Length: 187
Image 1 (cartoon, rainbow, N blue to C red):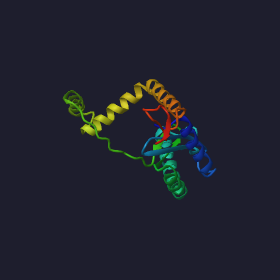
Image 2 (tube, rainbow, N blue to C red; image 1 turned 180 degrees about the vertical axis):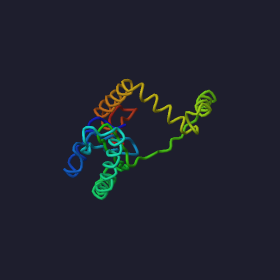
Image 3 (cartoon, helix red, strand yellow; image 1 turned 135 degrees about the horizontal axis):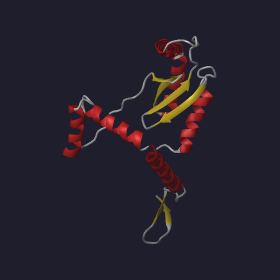
C-alpha cells in the first residue's frame, strides 16, 4: 500500500523531472506495486469552428500519435531513471480534449482461487458475450466494482494509511522485550 505522502513525493519527482515543454499540465500520476502511470494534457489541434466530429476525432488521434512519436526519447529517458529509482515500470498516456489515450501499460497477471459459484458468475459473463475468457470476465468485474465503489475504496485506502502511520509511531522493531524480565534487549 502506497501512502498519500509517498504518492505526493512521486508526483513531485515527476513534476520536477519532466521537461517543462513535455505537457501543458501533468494531470495524473498513479502507482501500484508494479507500475507508475504518468498522464499529461497536450494541446488540442486547432480546427475551424465548423469542423465535423469525425474531423475533430481524427485530428485528436493524429495529435496524440505525433506527440507519442516526437517525445519518445525524452519520455523513455525519464522512465529509465524512474524505473531504477522506484523499482516499477513507467507507463505513459495523454489527455487531448475529451480523449484519454494510454500508450503502454502493464497487464499484470493475478492468481486467484475461486469456488464454483464464483466460477459460474465468470462463465455466465462469457456465455453472455461480455467476456471471451475467465480472465477477461474477472477484469470486467473488477472494473465494475471500481466504478461503483470509489467512495468506499477511498475510505479504505485512507484507513490503511492511518494504520501505517500508527505502526510507524510504535516501538522500534529492532528492540525485543525479554518475556522473563520484561526488559528490552536488542533482537
